[in-house]
Amino acid sequence: MLVSWGALGKAMIFREYYRHRFNADLARFIVSIPAKSHNHDADMGGAFTIQYGNLTKDRPHLDVIDQDSRSNFALALFFTLLADEVCYTYFRSQYGPFQTLTQYPKFIGNCPSSCRTHFHPSHIFGAINYSRDPQNSEQRPNVHVEDTFDDATDVIRDELFDLFTNHLPAIDSSDFWIRCTNEFPYKTKHSKQVTK
Figure 1 (tube, helix red, strand yellow):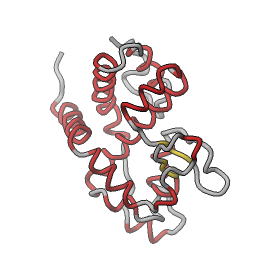
Figure 2: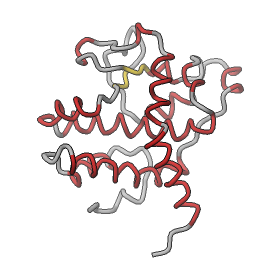
Figure 3: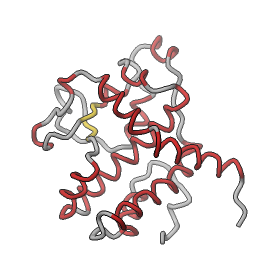
Figure 4: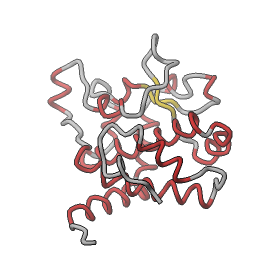
């Protein structure tokens, strides 16, 4: 099967970003958020929380991420949060070991009304492009992930299969991946495909 250089290039770029830059970017993003938003809910076991508003153009936190990396950051954050929520929802008996191993953040709403509500990871894409102030929209260009979403799914699938095979064999990789694809906000090549 022939693979176009364009598709291969996008997947390689996302793979490199995910493996070598995402954790550093996530750490810089987390540090930029006020301490009162960290570990927002004691019920979450001390996990770091990201509130919807902290991803919007109305707050400066995303400015710590290079503009050229923001779409990859948004994709990586989406898949990170998705894996955490899928594990919690469908593989609850394995969630403790998963959370201990990954330390993934939680995505919640804004205070005062939604800060105890976990948001679906797909809301990241709306948050990143949202602003109440038109000037903020002009200063920070929109982030588009539709063109690279499909390529990123291959990278994440491989990463998750590797994680479960090597560290959490009690989780069935194929079943986990199917649960993930059911939550995708876009139709992808995985929508009708049976994985490994």
